[in-house]
Every structure is written in structure tokens, then in C-alpha cells.
Image (tube, rainbow, N blue to C red):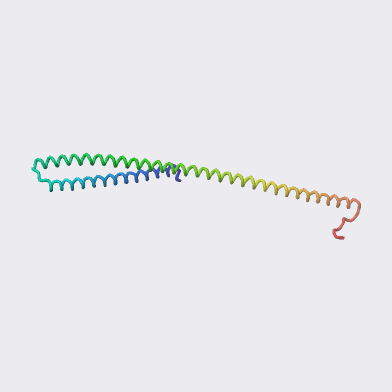
Length: 166
């Protein structure tokens, strides 16, 4: 049997899985784009800049260091944004879950009130019907006693019991 905790744990693990995939694919795309752009820029710079071997190597080393630094900054920024997005998503999911719990609790309380009211009405109606049946039973018993009393008195006086309709 599943409990509320199992559902929450499953939702949390699904969120973590999606968050990790979103953050890693965003970061991978950024790194690939930066490396590709850097490589193309370096290649174009080499083709169009006539320099000596030493100057060219120094320029390549400087450009490489610059791109490595920029790539690190972009990756850090992307990672931070991904963390913020993940945290915002968690907060929204937690808020939605809390709202659902409150609404479910409210619905259960309303349902309990309705059941209790229906139960009270049924008991009231049953009580009224029971009272009416008791009253009718008492009237019938009184009539039966009166009839038996009249019959006994008729036997004592040696009279024939009265016949209905005669």
C-alpha cells in the first residue's frame, strides 16, 4: 500500500532527475558552443593575421587562456542559473502540494459535516416514525383490551357476545 510519504519521495526523485538533466544539458550546450566559437575565432585569427611563429604562439596562448577563463565564467553562471531554476521549481511544487493538502483537508471536513448532518436527520426521522408506531401500537392494545373486557362482561352476564353488523 502506498503512503503519502511514498508519493512525496517519488515526486522529489523525479524532480531531482529532471533538474539534473536540465542543468547538465544546458551546461553541455554552453560549453560546446563556447569551445566551437573559440576554435573558429582562433582559426580565423591565424588565417588573417600574418605574424611570426613566436608572436603567433604567444597570441594563441593568450587567446586560449582568455577563452578558458570566459568558458569557466559562463559555466559557473549557467550552473548558478540552473540551481536557481531548480530551487524555484521546488518551491512552486512544494506550494502546490501544500495547497492540495489544505483543499483535501477542507473537503474531508465538509464531507464529515454532511455525513453527521445526514445521520442526525435520519435519527430524527427514525425517532419520529418510531414514536408514531408506538402510539398506534398503544391505541391498538387499548382497543384490544377494551374489546376483551366487553367480551368478558358479556360472558358474565350470560349474554351472547355482540356480533358485528347485527
